[in-house]
Length: 303
Image (cartoon, rainbow, N blue to C red; front, top):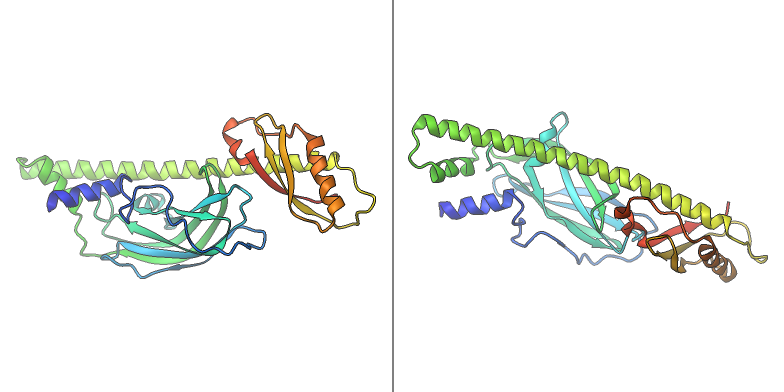
């Protein structure tokens, strides 16, 4: 039984198992979403269930709206934090909720790994950052901070993994050697937790930078299309529409279709024609960002 517990805990720690026993990947694909998002993406009204399993596990429930502009699917994931302590985020794991265009309620199972070496028996976090990532997880579509105090763990929790590893790997050690091995394992775990937190911070900064670049080039594409737009004589002031464009890596246009009409057919067709005239459209020099432009939607509004 001891061996099984160690192996399961180790697999959870290194991400080989998710909390519900499924392999990591697309979780929670069916939320019964209402297809009408009102045109925007966001995460609202976060709620957290009382901790269970001796304070190790909670369910985060949040209202999610996704307009599909960054791709047909996205992922929602929570990040727990405590003011003034950078390593805290590395003590938690969670499922990653898979969402599609629409709005609805999602629930995400989250766990506090206080049975790992270097992680305290209990901790109080005071913030939850909900991230909405694009399908390739290369950019943050939406980041919403929530002030939420959660008391994790139990003062009587036993760090079983550290003690069991000492027993299993060094059964013949003297008390002094066992204490040194335990201290070394805890120091290594703290180092890995700090490294994981740093990697998460770097990934978030890279994603934010990529999102800024994507936004810049979406604006450049809109400007290029406006310069090539010929206003129909019958169109009136104040019209706008949302156009979906499929692009090739060099910026050539495969198709252009109005997906949210202005109500004026002549205006809509003139926008589609302007997209083709504007080709090749400007794209970021980094090829890794092209997936965000392969199928692109933007609102066209004459200036």
